[in-house]
Length: 402
Image (cartoon, rainbow, N blue to C red; front, side, top):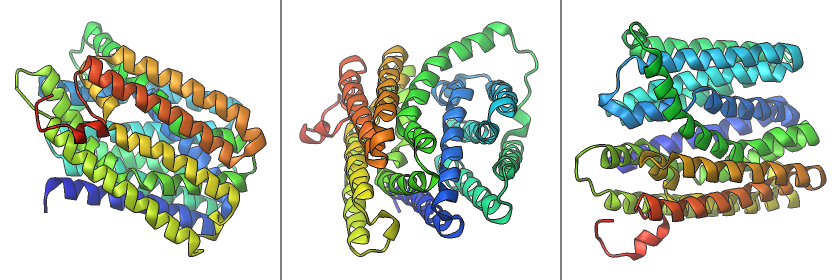
């Protein structure tokens, strides 16, 4: 079995498990219960990206040339920022406490996965970042709602997940966690370099997660749950595309940060073909399930419109390739961060304007517009500044070095 197929299969297990957990949550906890779970999880994902300060990407980018203490620094800084959010959550909102704890756990697992990628343990890194992380989260959150449906249930589940993440960290890299002998200049330089990646990643996540958070505040938990289920179906179509994130970013880093003469155009084309094939297949599969009334929660006009808008946005994501990683790994952090921030602001603004009146279809339309605009601009900038054609247009070019 070839490596690309292995990556796709691992991501298929990941995305299929997320969809399965979503359906299980709707069945066991109802649409309202799943709406609460989806909101806290989205909050946790956003916080995890803000709190890791882009250092997971720094670990990958610098690779073997980096001092091993960076992992320890990353974990400490992430925990510090999440601790501040926990305190704020205790004052204002219990959901923020749960989100901060989930964020700290996700950041920790992202650092573990990034470190494993440095040692070229790509499959294990992908499994930890995806299957291990989100399987644990969903099972804990669903169990907490079903077994102990109280205000502190999600917080308790988040504490258990953070403990789980730290157990993985110590088993995998306990000896690399020392921060002795670190200078302030080293820490500040690492954080400064990582911050641009953090801004890019956090804005990117806001473009994909803000809709569920905003839905939870303006619409009912039941509506939020149905919309979150539609999101899970749409993002199942990304599994071929996301599989490439275990390989291509490291290749980009080697191309731009070493003396090796690496031609990545062939790998880009190969992964684009895989991503597009999977995308088309998932769209047809979803249509079959909907018209076969297999998922009755989505058998209504609003859910169908939301799915249509989301699939268009996801399609642009797949067709643009890993343009964002091409920008950050080539050192064009500021441009990537600026484009992502503008896209996130557009997404949030449109969600605030549309969700109160149109619910799920409005949230999906806002997400579609932000994704199409962001990936179109990033793909153009990747070709212009990084001199990499990452989009589907490269499939129509002759085999040559870009």
